[in-house]
Amino acid sequence: MDMENIENIPVDSDETQPQELIVEDIDIFEFRQSKLPDNPFLSRGCCHPPKLYNKNESVFQHRCSKFDSHDWLKDIPVSQHMVPTDVVEVRFKNSRKDYFRTPPDLELVVGDIVAVEASPGHDIGIVSMVGEMIRFQLHKKHLSSASEDIKKVYRKARLTDIEKWISSVEMEISTMFRARTIADSLGLLMKINDVEIQGDNTKAIFYYTAEDRVDFRELIKLLAEEFKVRIEMRQIGARQEASRLGGIGSCGRELCCATWMSDFKSVTTNSARVQQLSLNPQKLAGQCGKLKCCLNYEYDTYVDAIKGMPNTDVRLKLKRGDAVHQKTDIFQKILWYSYVSDLGNLIPIPVDQVILILEENKKGNLPEKLEDFSKAIEKKTAFESGAVQDDLTRFDHL
Image 1: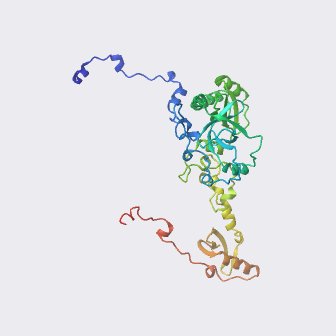
Image 2: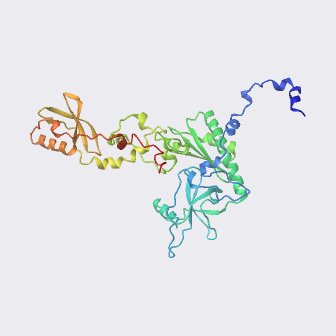
Image 3: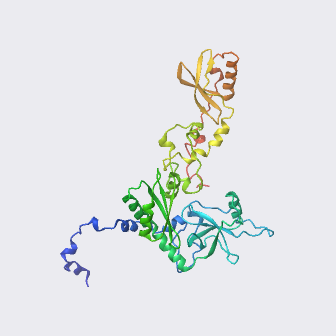
C-alpha cells in the first residue's frame, strides 16, 4: 500500500474520540504494582533478578548491598593446622542476616543461592560471607561455632526453589499495600513499613511502627485469610524504619543506617552541647525524626579534648571589670571572653592564660585587663581554608 493513500483510509469515529478515564475501574494495587522498579531483588543485594535458565554467580555483588559485610581475610592463606569453619553467613532482605552450618559434602562460595532451615519450612537466601572471617563475626556476637542454635543449610537452591522464591519476592510490595488497607479499615494506629515473604511462600513477616501498643489479633486473622500464609508481626523503631527505606542525608551521602550501621546507640542532646552545637531540632534531627546518629561519631574526641578546660561558668575578675565566657574553640584551646560592660567585644585568650587568671583570682589578685593575656588569631588564606581549590585541568599541560 502506498504511504500517500494511508491518510485516505476511513477510521471509525468512535475510536478517534478520547476515552474518558473512569477512576472506579482502576485497581489501585495493580496501578502501584505497574510503577514498581524492575528489580525487586535489590533489597536482597542482587544487581538483577535471578534467572531460571542460567547460572547465577553474578547475581549477588557486594557493592550494591545494604549492610554489606567485607571479608578482610579473603586474601590471607589459612594455616594448615586450622580446621576450616563449616559456618557461613546468609543474607535475606535488607539487614536480616543469620549464620548457618553447612553439610560436610557441600562447598559454598559467596553469591550462592541456598535453601536454609526456617520455622516452619525453609527459606531462600544468598551466601554473603564464608571462610575465617566468620570466626571473628561469631566472636563479636558472642556465639560459638559449635552451638546447637545455629540452623542448617539444606542445599543449593533448585530451579523449583528459585521459581517459588521469585514469585514470593514479587508479591511483597503489593502485599504491603493490601495490608495497609486492611489495617486502616480496622482503625489501627500503626504503619506497615515492609513485608518479607519466606522463600517457600509459607510465612510473611510484617514490619510496622506504632507509638502505642497495638492489638493486631484481628488484623492477623484477616491477613491470614487474605494471603493464606503464616503471619508474623515485628515492631521496629523510627531509626529501623529509616534504615529499611533508605535515603540521602543532609551531608549528601546515603544514610548511615541504610548502608553500614547494624546497631543503634542512643543519642542525647548532651552530645550536641559538648560539641558546641546549637540545639536546633531542625538541624540536629535526621530523616527518622530522631537525633542524628552522627552526633556520636566525634563525641569521644570532644570529651577528651575538653579535659583540663576551665569552668566557663566562673567569671574572670580584673581591675577593668568582670569578664564572662562567650564561646570556645576546643581544639585550638582558645576561649573568648568579653567584659560585662562591653559584651560585643570578644577577646581570645588561650586556655593556660585563663587558668592563670583564675588562680590569681583565688589568691585575691586582680590582673589589670584581658588584653594583656589575649592571643592574636592568625587568619588562614582562602587556599589553606579550602574555600578555593585549583582548577581540575591544572595538570593537563604536564
